Image (cartoon, rainbow over all chains, first blue to last red; front, side, top):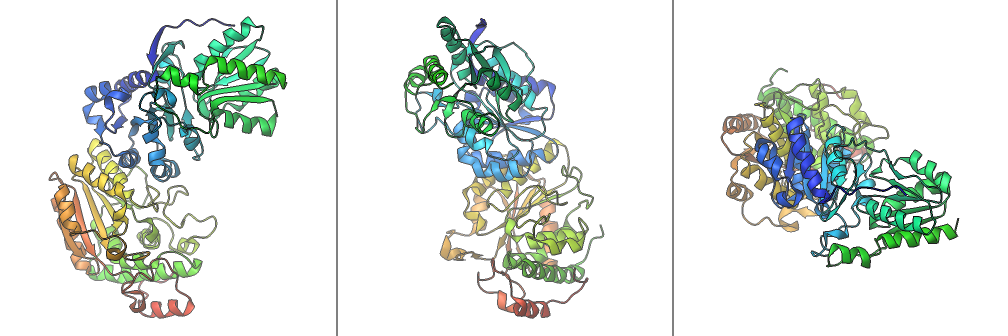
Amino acid sequence: MKKFDVQNVKDTRSGFGAGLSELGKTNSKVVALCADLTGSLKMDAFQKDHPERFFQVGIAEANMMGVAAGLTIGGWIPFTGTFANFSTGRVYDQIRQSIAYSGKNVKICASHAGITLGEDGATHQILEDIGLMKMLPGMVVINPCDYNQTKAATIAIADYDGPVYLRFGRPAVPNFTEADGKFEIGKALMINEGADVSIFATGHLVWKAIEAGHALAEIGIDAEIINIHTIKPLDEEAVLKSASKTRCVVTAEEHQMNGGLGDSIAQLLARKLPTPMEMVAVNDSFGESGTPDDLMKKYGLESVNIVEAVQAVLKRK
Amino acid sequence: MKQLNAQEISGLSSQIRRDILRMVHGCKSGHPGGSLGCADFLATLYFNTMEHQTNFNMDGVGEDLFFLSNGHISPVFYSTLARAGYFPVEELKTFRKLNTRLQGHPTTHEHLPGIRVASGSLGQGVSVAAGAALSKKLNHDKHLVYVLMGDGEIEEGQNWEAFMFAAHNKIDNLIVTIDFNGQQIDGSTKDVMGLGDDIADKLKAFGWEILHMDGHDVQNIIDTMAKAKELSGNGKSIFIVMKTEMGYPVDFMMGSHKWHGVAPNDAELANALSQLPETLGDY
């Protein structure tokens, strides 16, 4: 199992803030909107450096999505910022009609996704957002794994013409991908080549999968670990190639099982390469208050859960 | 495009009304009531008020833009665009039929020239237009952004978010007209969801500039829109309360909400068309 150096421990939302700040300097067409969460989204630097291209919309997310759609008419590239819950479920129809169906070049940037939002509880912990957004025709859905990758993804989506949902989180997590690396939308990243099982992970669960990979290596299981940072469009070739080699699959994500990454991969495998599969995800449940670490343990999203899923799927191989 | 006078616009809107009725009759569906009521306004906007290019470009830099928020009155929008030259008038016969660019509600998805955003799910147009107006400011483009919305539609909360946003940001290149016909699907707007005090007072309290006009007096529309243009650029968004009659001027379609979303049968179509001179030739 390959070793990864943790450069530091940082929140992915700060990667977004850093990427947006850099875009402010390098892309004069980028504008940003925020619904009263500028500090939480780490959009302060962009706001300070480019006040003429920053719009505070107040606690009015529906209007924010409409205004963003309108800003694209005339050539601007709007990045909206609020929590994932208020970026998706609260404004689904606004995104559906004014952005997705209208084909507008809006980047919906969503922080505090998933259960690791923590103490605020289930009202704010959306675990359905990937599903909601991937169902919209033409919507790109990205869930990077660490600070560096979130920064790179933020920069990359400005060059893509079309609606994008970029999902990131609140807690500080190991930052281990290459600094200032290039981000390619829709391209799965090989973390560790292995022969016994394919682990496809996204977001915060990529590091958990690496931890699981080490634990599995100690008991003689050679896991292939792939970072699926882009859930839509899914890198079908990479998934099929790995699954056809290992003949069993585990997916891992901080999201509902319904509608998430596992659901996308299961659809693909069912159609093209039926393969035994286990899913590490939240199983049809709301979250609750607690520390991110306690919640990840209680809801079964730890490396130990990935190890167990691998052991279960190996028996079905 | 040549600017038409009031008399010419009245002739044009008679033809647009014929188009509306024939379109909804042709597919046995659609929304004739509000469409008929807004024909004079749309005709005036596109043939007198706005500076616009029929050689359609999505970004619309260097021209005025129009957004239809109450997308269900698509027949009047499509007829006006076709009569202005955005696409062939003959295409109106495809309205709501399979593979048409003239979808039930307006959309960019089929690339119909003249449409800049999908609408139909109500309450979103003012937000989009506010964004487009900000885009014009960022582009140092002095042209204006116009919106038409319905009075039933104002029950959607997003409108009030947008009203606040436009006032707060002094979006003074934005001119919103509300079709105040007092009717919605389930009955009169007063019965369905009373607005309380006068709509104009509400918008004024939000910080908007208010104008009133008679949506069936073309000269009054021309003059009021000219006044709105004059008032633009002074730090306030502009809201025009336009009094109309749903179904106007077809006698049996006025005075109720009945013709909001119902197509006329053959006899009703003939009766309605007999009340509307064919001025420019039917499609």
